[in-house]
Length: 201
Image (cartoon, rainbow, N blue to C red; front, top):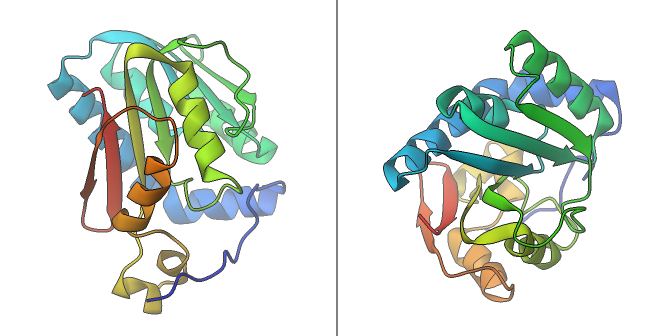
């Protein structure tokens, strides 16, 4: 099926959009955080500095922090209402000492080169205006021996029924975009409704 145009803003700037996004997606993104934690454990990761580039309401950072007590996690997002919601969820989880959220553009990350042991990016490749610029930034801030974990919904027949699946990339399309970036060699794979790209695992 042909890829459809986005039907929502690239950045959730209102509380209504942010709350609606949370209501519809909280459980699924929490499951993504648990899935990523499991992959990291199998890779031998014990702890370090993690960046969630495009953290939304921080469901993934919260799950990673629960699984890896020796981590410090920074999440960036351009949606201030999402960050506010994330801060409240982090406080409720008792993780404010280990997770910090701040406003930031994933296409121009405000961190130094080689700064993070793990860089995470979820459900964003099909949303950002310049996905190659974002991928280049993920590579730049990851340590040379660091891990990069990317996932997004994939486009398939379900897009005829559920609109958001029509706006995403197939794994083949995502890998073509990844191939145009500076990101390190990794492996792409399909899940039931998502695709993954994992590097350094």
